[in-house]
Length: 292
Image 1 (cartoon, rainbow, N blue to C red):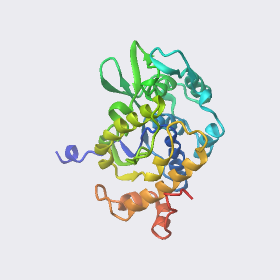
Image 2: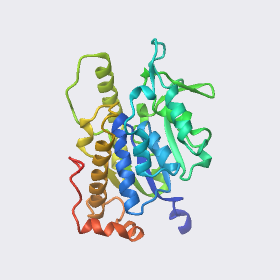
Image 3: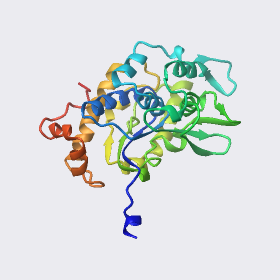
Image 4: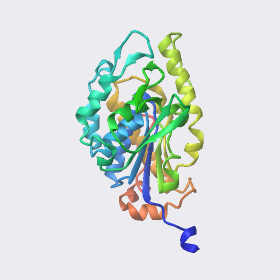
């Protein structure tokens, strides 16, 4: 009976990556911090931009290599405007971009197990992709309704996973001893223009934000900062800056956890597993508000 009650979870470290458009480049900075401390997640879950970044990290790309993939690129390399049918933009170029760069074509071939969360538009529920082709599942997870056409997979139309689970911690929690969560869509009001794009962006931001709170509470290490809120959804001109903000936020999130201000899971075993983290208890981390 005791063995059943205290059964060990299948994974030690889970990494949950939220959606947030270009703010998702902050995940690159988090990957950099994890690499520096020797923290390799055993499983990754991602929604939208988190699914994109997570697929590359699970495929064996380093933080620096992922940053290089997106530096200097334009939005038109990933999508093209179309006569409005089911979406303003066609994202087939995005699939091609990902297919040409992923070493693994299928989930089963990835170096780290990956869960990609999308929304089943036909049946009104979340779908967690864990097998089959990676690129189309990621594209579906990133397809913000109205802005992008739904993605058809096995006869079902899928759109952005953020409609129900923008921060997919719950897909990992029961399987992992520790969950590191990166929420790049903080609650930050900002000015916006009265045009179709800005109104759509702001509306989806509120929708995605509304379903993140339960997942925020379920993280052992929560990485987020209001500084993410200063960047727009399709801001491809500040990849390096956003990544630096993510790096600073990662150091602060890890430091908060080690300091014991989050009591959900003991930090001691985590520190023993990753002894390089001890220097965070000695040296203060950079200010995540500037990313410097």
